[in-house]
Image (cartoon, rainbow, N blue to C red; front, side):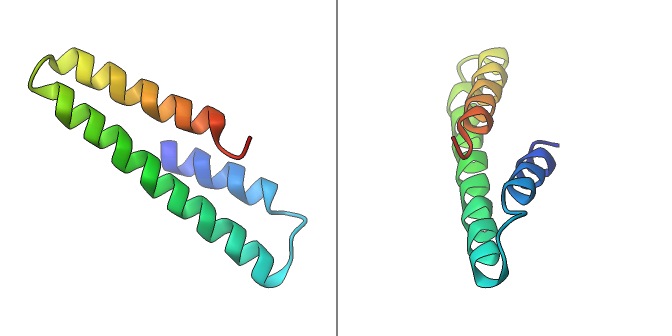
Length: 72
């Protein structure tokens, strides 16, 4: 769901763009999505062995922060 919302937001922001500029914008957005997912997963994996609940919460907080700061 996170990925769908991320790309929908990117698509809406890229609406006035045309041609290669739009493709470049969406490619950068996809790269940002992958980076945020990798970081969230890394945080989850790091904290999972210490506390499973804390790992989930921190991973979700990191993903939420990335979505909030997306294209600000």
